[in-house]
Amino acid sequence: MTSPIPQLPTRFRSNSATTAARGPTAITLALAVALCGCSGTASNKDQAPAPTGRVQTASAASGSLSAIATAYGTAVSAPAHTRLIVMPYEGAISSVAVHAGDSVSADQAIVTVTRTPATAAQFAQVHSALSFAQQDLLRVQRLYADKLATTDQVATARKALSDAQAQLDAFNRTGADQEQTALRAPFAGVITSLTATPGERPAIGTTIATVSSPGDMIVQLGLEPADAAKLSPGAPIRLLLAADDAAPITTKLVAVGQALDSVSRLVNAVAPLPPADSAHVALGSMLMAQVQLPARQGVIVPRSALLEDAEGPYVFTLVAGKAHRQAVKIGAETDQSALIVEGLAAGAQVIVAGNVGLEDGVAVTESKP
Image (cartoon, rainbow, N blue to C red; front, side, top):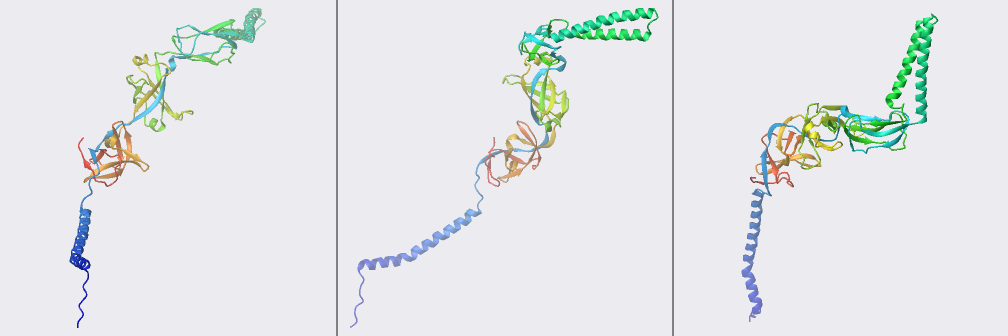
């Protein structure tokens, strides 16, 4: 007899059947998903990258631009209206009648000087020499009349008298003929410096005060050597005071130095203050000058298009929906514009807004301002 084929339990039979029935379907689905995934990847590669941001552009144009150089200076009295008060002879400062910054009238006493005993002795000697020369000339003239002296002796005596008189006149001009001398202001002005202190004995010729006229002022500027090399007298400048509401002062350079200052390492330049503006500027005021440099030719772009990093200045241009970085060389700059002398052609569309953080080659969308 043939043994009957053992039958699997019902739960195993149904699971096997289900598995057999489901097997082909699961494989087919897996393959379909894989194929779809491959197909999707290939499709994404063919698509253009999505724009990463919005930008605004402007057209680069050929033209010329004058750069503005910045310099700083001080308002001082013109040399023709500045006087130094110096120690006239060996003496001591007995009193000081003013302070630095004071306004003084013409002939007003500034300091009083008392002569030393040595100066008094020198004056006595000079006065005595004059008296002797006068008497000696009379003596020689009497001898000449008696034919006991020559014309040369008379001439020598007259020369000695003239020299003695000149020495006395010099003493009188310094005030050394008096026990005390008041040193006075030569004109109405301002005491811009004062070093005199009562009791001191400055050396002869030492400056003890400076009197300046506020009615004729100049501005002494310090220019960067590279800027000074491009400038000459007559260049227009604008002077700005520290006060925010002060109107700019328009003037011109009248002198540009040819050497560096030994202290500041800048080139000294001078610009006059117009008389109408001098009344609003105090002596010693600090001013900022904006000096217009000669114009240069190139490609002009808005100042906002310029960017700079460790590699130097650059701009982004928009070409076929993508941002392209271009290194440039700057020839001049103002607050609003920049002059490009290398690296950019006229007519290029430069990105002026949304350019910060861009990378070379990224897709962008242009929007109107």
